[in-house]
Each structure stands twice: as C-alpha cells, then as structure tokens.
Length: 558
Image (cartoon, rainbow, N blue to C red):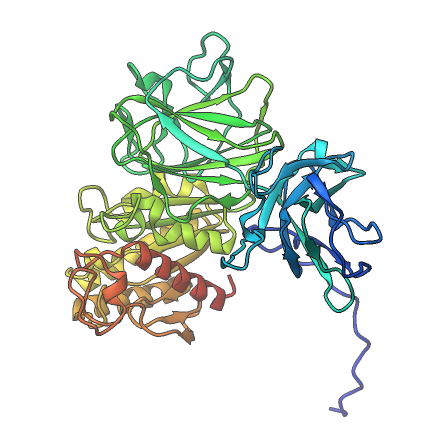
C-alpha cells in the first residue's frame, strides 16, 4: 500500500436541516422606544406670568416639552429632571394635536387640580416623592405621529424652572406600547350574553337564532363530544383519555385547551361552572398567569359567562387552558370575527400516573403539573396529558395498566414526542413483572409510532432516602429502556442516559431530604417541593420538576 494521498477539496455544503421547535414568545419583541429633551437656553429669571395654566417656557420662548412617536392606545411614561423654585403650581400635561393642553397628570382629566401635581408643590416644608407619570394616547393627541408631553405652570408670583447649561432641564419619555390585554375579566351566573353578541357554538352543538359554529382549535385533547340532556347538550368535553367516556357535564379527560383568533374588543366565554374548575387565559402567546386560576362561579352545574375585555380592536389569538370545565362556546360582538389559528407543527404527550395527571397537592389537577410547563419551555403548544392516578406498568389502580391504554390514548393521536413516566405505583411489585411489562409497552409504542421521539422517566422518589423498591424499579426501567433503544432520565439519581444506555450526564437526585411541606425536617428540598401527603409534588415542586426534565431533555439533544 502506497502513502496516503493529499486531502481532497471540500465538497459542497449539505442541505439545511429542518427548523427547530418554535420557542416560547417573549414578553416584548422589541425594546421600548425612548425620547429625551435637554433644554439649556434659558436665562435665570422667573417664568412668564400665568394667570391660567400655561405651558412653561424658557426666557427665549422654548417650551419645556418633549415629543415621541406613538400610536393610539400607547402608554407614554414620563421622567422629569429639573431644579425649580418659587410659588408656581406645576403639573405634567399631555398636549392635543394642535399643541394645547388636553390632559393633566395629577387629575387624569382635562381639568387640573387646583394646586397641580403634589410632587411639584411650591413649599420646602414638605418632602416629595414621584413615580413615573403615564399618559395613554388617543388619536386626538397625535400630530404627525408624535405625542407631546409638557410642563405646565400656573401663578403670577415668583417661580423659576432652571434650564441653562449648569442646571439643564431634562424630560425623558418612554413608549410602553398599549396595555397588554385583557383590561378586565369578570364572571356572572347567567346564560344571557351582552345584547347583540353572537354565539360561536362548539362544532356539533345545535344552533339557534343567530348562532354560528365557531372556528375553534382544540389542543391537548381530542374526540370532543356533545353531552345529552339539559343543559349538557350545549356543551362539549373531550374523551381522549381512558376510560374514554362522557357523563353528565363531565368526561374522562379533564384538561384541554381552546384557541381562536378574533379582532374583538371583548368576548364572553360560555361555561358550566364546576367547583373544581380552573382556567388560564393567554393572549398572543402571553399567559396572563403562570398557575391555572379557579373559576369563581356561584352555583355548580349552572351556566356562567366569563367576560374578557381586550381593549382596542385588533387581531389577536386567544387561548383558554381549561380544567374540569364544560365548554359552551364564545360570544362575540356583532362587528367582530373569529378565525381558526394554525395547528401547531408538533404534538407532545405524556403517558403516566398522578405525577403527570395531578393530585390534590397541586392546582388544577393535570393542567397544573410539570408536563405543560416543560412543554412550554420546549416550545410545544399542543401538549396532551394522559396521566391517571394510581396506574403504572403492572398496576391498574382504578383504571388500567399503561399497556391497555396505549391503543386508544396514545397511538391514534401520533405525538411527535412522548414521555412515559411511571413506576412509583409499581415499586412494591415484582421486578421481573415490571421489566416484562415495560419491554412490551416500549415495543408496542415503537412499532405503532416509529417516528415518535420517546423519553422514559424512571421511578419517582419523594424523598432523598428512597427504599429498595424505588431504586430497584428505577434500575429495572433503565435497563428496559436501554434494551428498547430509548433515552432514560432517572429522578432517583439525576442521571441521564441516551438511547444506547450510555450515561450522558448526572445532575444529581431530584429530591433531597426526608420532609414535606407539613412536616419539614430541614434536610433538603423535600420540605419545599413535596406536598403534605408526603408523595406528590406541590405547585412549586411541579415547577421545579419541569426545569429538571427540561434540562435533561436538552442534555439529550431535544
């Protein structure tokens, strides 16, 4: 064999890879616009006499004001820096398009307070404090797209505002944009919408009068089914979780989301109030709250309308995350329209027990667990929670073992990513039986869903001192996952293994110490993250687990 030849020329670049998962929208896409006026052309002399409120000006006539680009409904925050003396009353004012005073900061109206803004009161006998003033702009305040804020004064006595090089007058404006929707939310026990509003009914619900069928995108669940009888025949609920049943004002799948686009100034959600009902509103990808919020209804089983005021009419995408809430549609003003948002490109799912399906230790059952939080971090908008308490690989609890649920709860919905988390309810059982059940489950899912990325999470431990049943079950599931070519994440050790069974990283045990929220021991994070039952995570625990799962998935390249 002769010597190795020289390296050949670099070949052409390969095709671009597929786009990554869409990240979670940030709070603001752009930074806030600012403008500043620095005025230094005035002489050291009193302001011109002002028997009525007048825009203050320097000795050469330069008005003490600043302008900034704005649109109707923008909020302009004002910060003022100046040295002043004398007996004049002063206030910040918003000018109209003609340059006249339109609104006073101290009153929020077109009429000033008698002595102006308290922070500018002409006396050295009082301490002063100022918070940044905010004006909301309307079309009447704009001149060539600019909003202008000025300093006004009133009085005929001595009064100076210094505006020369050694003592400059400064005004800084920040355009905060419009106030985020919604502007208000209220609920009432009634079935009568605002006069003229048109009902956008869930598909399948019978229409009456001016009703139309709404263009709703359902997320997180499927097989939405109309109930029977009064009033359930006007509501839908999903039945995509075992035992896949629909009963009066209830179903076997308690969590789901509804999304729709609208240009409405307000909408009314028609729901049937249940005492365990929770909801969370998102507008254009921004969650109003991190946690699901209880539906503050009056009489369980009764129709309620949740009224959401959005502010100015503009195109928005609304999302309602729902838990234990029969959905009866949306009422919109007659001038508003509804459209169907695009289906998210990817779907995620978890098959599990109460760690995913929720417990009394956390808010809103399955809608408040680690899973939806992790999926949001990973950029999945369509996340299906298929957890049922008391179940496992070999333990049916009051329902069925994982294997018996796959054909209805998992494979028909073809998730792009599937998390399997169980084992805690099995840890007192036979390890060979757990191993055989896991082998069969993994094989069944891989055969039915060859393109699905699967992650196996090991046995939960609510304590930093797990018993042998927990550690043995964790090890059994790790071996079974490796045999099936699936990545594995261990809550017990914090170790992360790739699809070949190779250790990728060790982040440390998820839970440390032996306490819980009702019986802290001061020995670890269990005091903070484990609920009073000593087993299930609380809200803080689920938020923590979400971060641990997210970190593990990123280690695995997800």
